[in-house]
Structures are given as C-alpha cells and as structure tokens.
Length: 448
Ligand code: ACO
Image 1 (spheres, protein in one colour):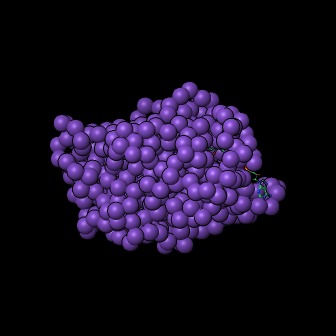
Image 2 (cartoon, rainbow, N blue to C red; image 1 turned 180 degrees about the vertical axis):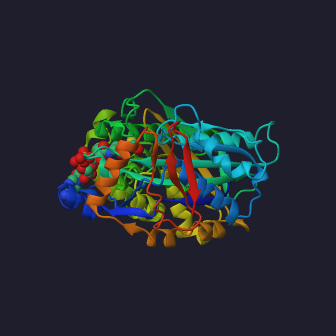
Image 3 (cartoon, rainbow, N blue to C red; image 1 turned 90 degrees about the vertical axis):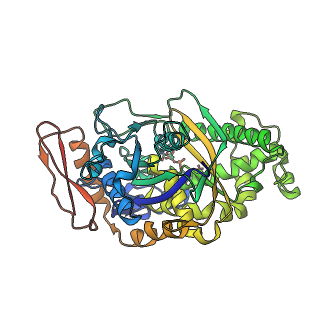
C-alpha cells in the first residue's frame, strides 16, 4: 500500500462566536491582551442546541454526502475528544446513527481521549489499521470533536469549538511519512479534568505553556534523529515547507516556531544563517528550564523567525485564530486552514505537524502532499470545506449573551429531563442539533 493518509476532510464550527476585542473590554482586561497578547481574533462556541455529538453527526454526514462516499464503504470510525458527555458510552456509538440507516453496523473503533491529543491517537489508529493485515479494504474515518470552555478568568478567552472529519485510505493527497515520528509522553498536571461534575478543566496556565514547549523540543529532536537515521543526512527546518501546530492560542504558535529555530541553532543546522547565529549566540549556554523562562531569548528567536513564520506557519493559523482552541480538532483545523489558503501550491511539499495534549502526550510527524485526483484532491478538499464562507456567515453575539449561554450550559452539564429551545435559526441546513435529554439521560437530536 502506498501513500496512506487523508483522502478528504470536512470541518464544522458553530455559527455563533464572539469577537476577542469585545470580550477583552467586557472582561476588563487591558486593551490588546486577547488580540495581540494571545493573538486571537474571535472565539466560536456552542449554544445550548449544539454539543460534540451534534457537531460530529453534522461533519460526518456532510463529508459522506459532499465526497459521495457510500456509508457502507467505511470500515473503521475513530473519534478523538476530551469532552465528556458519558463516562461509558462512546461518542462513536452516537455517530453510528448515520451508518445504521444504511445498514452498516460493521465498523470498528471507539473513542480516544487524552486532552487535545485524542484526535492524533484516533488518526494513528486508522492509519495503522489500513497498513495492517486486518484491513478489509474499506475506508477509515476519523472525527475530532470538542467544545473547549473555561471558567471565568484568564483562560476563558482560549476556548473554542469545532468538529473535523477525515477520510483515511491509500493513495492520499495528504500522505503520512510514517517512519518520521517523534513522541514525548510524561506525567504532568498542567491541564486536567478531575471534577466530573464540571465541564471546565483545572489548568495551570504557565505550567501548560512550559510543558508544551518542552514536549515540542523533545519531539523535534526525536523527529530529526529518526530522519537522520533513515535519510543519512541532517534534518533542518529548511527540509519542511510548512509547520502546523496544535493551537491553544496563536501566541504560543509564534513562540513554538521560534523555539524550533532555537533548536536548529543549538544543533548547528544548515538552516541557520550567520546573522541568526550572531543574534542567538548570547543564549547558547542557556540550558533546560532557564531557556523556557528567558524573555530575552523568546524575543530574540521570535524576531529572527518572523519572516519564515509568515511563509511556513501563518497560512495555517486562520481557523485557530478565528474559532479558538478546538482541542482535538485544533491541529487539524490548522491543517485545514493551510489547505484552504495554499491548496494550489502544495504539490510535493512536506508539512510537519505537532500534536500536543496536556497531561501529557505529544507527537511530531509529517505529511507529504500531492495535488491528488478528484474528488480526493487538495483543491476539492478546499472547495468542500468552504472555510471562507463558513467564517463569513457566523453571527457575533454580545458578551452578555455569551456569559448567559455559558451559565446555562454549566447548569445543564450532566443534567437530565430537559428540552432545549430547539432554536436552530442560526444553523445552516443539514446541521444536527440537540432537542431533548430525557429522564434516563438519553439524548435526542434533529437535523435542520
Ligand atoms: N497588549 C498586548 N499584549 C498583552 C497585553 C496587552 N494589553 N496584556 C498582556 N499581554 C500579553 C502578555 O505579555 C502575554 O504575552 P507573552 O506570553 O508573550 O508575554 C500574553 O498577553 C498573555 O498574558 P498573560 O498575563 O501571560 O496571560 P494570563 O496568564 O492571564 O493567561 C494563559 C494566559 C495562561 C494562556 C491562559 O489563557 C490559560 O490558562 N489558557 C488555557 C491553557 C492553555 O491554553 N495552555 C496552552 C497549552 S495546553 C492546551 O492546549 C489547553
């Protein structure tokens, strides 16, 4: 089998959002903190009629329809999510509603969970299945779905919500370079959800930033090592055309790319020119924790990385900046943004991906892109996703309305015996929405 990877993609995010500039003023944060400080433009969120299950149903049915995939052709369905609606019943089983109608119940796979990493775990499971002797020749389907909500406070503007569906199979335009992979997994309490009565995480913001960057360093070193062992030459940032990061908020992505440049500098890689060497020389002796704490290093690396950032990172930042952290979907929404912005110029390019989930698990891996053939071509993927239109047609809600919705959702979380407003006026046709949770906690959905 050749070029196993992503054949097709679809993205869904709620039509309801709030401008970060407005939220910032409402929260009494200093002007520019959310927009420049965090680098975010807008934040999407679910209202009481949407959740991770409705978004999954919407994105899966849309993918099957728009690429004309017969539902009986799906042999594996994997869901990545960290949004807990049920401690036993997987989100995957809810999504089975879309397949049972067509008589297909022969579909392997359940949910994968570890913070924002679950989507990557689900994706690897699908790819591994197709490359294994138990593959039955059908497609794999991966769904990443999350609603990221935080308690009032500094983390709240880093929320977001979305679902992504990816069709997996051989001869893909977004093909895995399976041999090049570096992981870093360890035990940390940077962000976790120990309170099962609340949808909100417990988060140590500063620790989560350091954990993310440490995991990035470690994954990059391992990725480079594997590349060098197999290719017999050094890897440098010049060997990749794009870098796509898990994006809790854009500032961390800027810092991450700059951090890779610092790694290349320390490794004496060919990508680092004389002027960069000069500018980073004062930091050459910073080791370990010191280097994560140094503001001067952060500034110096971001400055030398700026022009490369604009070329190799910026095109992937659109949806994460506009919708916010989508947890498991965040990395793949960034990939979707790259395809949206650059689909006609990606043939033959290498894209390096960095997946991070608190707690923590992280992997760096890469794709080799090619134009592909209709319907599985990069240009058709961009057309189907229709990101520009989806972003444009959203409704901006006021901060007061947003806070009210958060309160209502807090109250409803884990609850039973209620009907929703069933107000789907803002949803586009084909969108699933929650209508009722009955006295047995059973959830009911309708399609607009
Ligand atoms: N104008 C411009 N920039 C500003 C302004 C202003 N008026 N005010 C603050 N800033 C800058 C700060 O300097 C800082 O930037 P820097 O890091 O480059 O210095 C940035 O805005 C954020 O300000 P902080 O004071 O550091 O923000 P705070 O600590 O209040 O919250 C945090 C930020 C920790 C990211 C919080 O939003 C959070 O906890 N989020 C959730 C955790 C998270 O997303 N972690 C990332 C990895 S784990 C995961 O994916 C969930």
